[in-house]
Image (cartoon, rainbow, N blue to C red):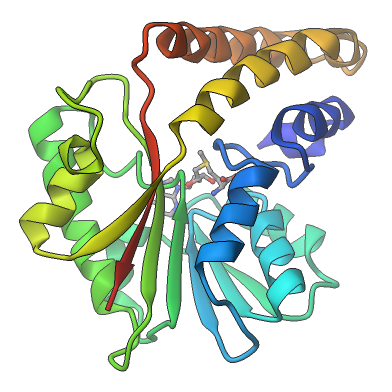
Length: 248
Ligand SMILES: C[S@@+](CC[C@H](N)C(=O)[O-])C[C@H]1O[C@@H](n2cnc3c(N)ncnc32)[C@H](O)[C@@H]1O
């Protein structure tokens, strides 16, 4: 949470993501452009963004397309930050909400976005994880308007599962969508992710002094350790990232 408030993190975002929207996943400016080119957002859209974090991705998409966006996040501190940061963005609203309880939401949407937010649904045992992922996707699909819409998921394979083949149908998410019988199209973003982790590592090292002067060297060290893990996975060819578009 504290990351959003740091000047040093804003600089890191600009360098690594190509735009400072306080991202905490892997959504770069290039990926945002791909999202906006594949999906036809417009002013009549009512969009749900699941796990919206800082909210600035929602605000950016709404500003570019005039779509109405409701961002939900399980973390109340994050939602308070997003609400404040986006108070002047007319068509975005944020709520504290656990996506696992989505059945309780009596609203339907023209589009549902999950940007690096479905990794935290259960413990990391592969069977329970895939079951909870499947059941959440099923509930999200039920919240797309009956006359049509899209569920869009940005998904990178989790470290505990390396698919035997690179095609989307062998990934954790592809397996879930196949088992649910939902047709989808996918866009391979692996090269973007591989380049992203190296840029993030370089950006962190470049702004280390700023983290130090903001008294946040522990945060910096934790972040760098995680980033180095992913840079290493990229070198081993173990990163797989796709955008999945499920149409109703
Ligand atoms: C990796 S961050 C990504 C944030 C944002 N989508 C981005 O790309 O910058 C994951 C977000 O999902 C939220 N989250 C995790 N579990 C959730 C749940 N069960 N329901 C709603 N949000 C959740 C976290 O609080 C966090 O803000």
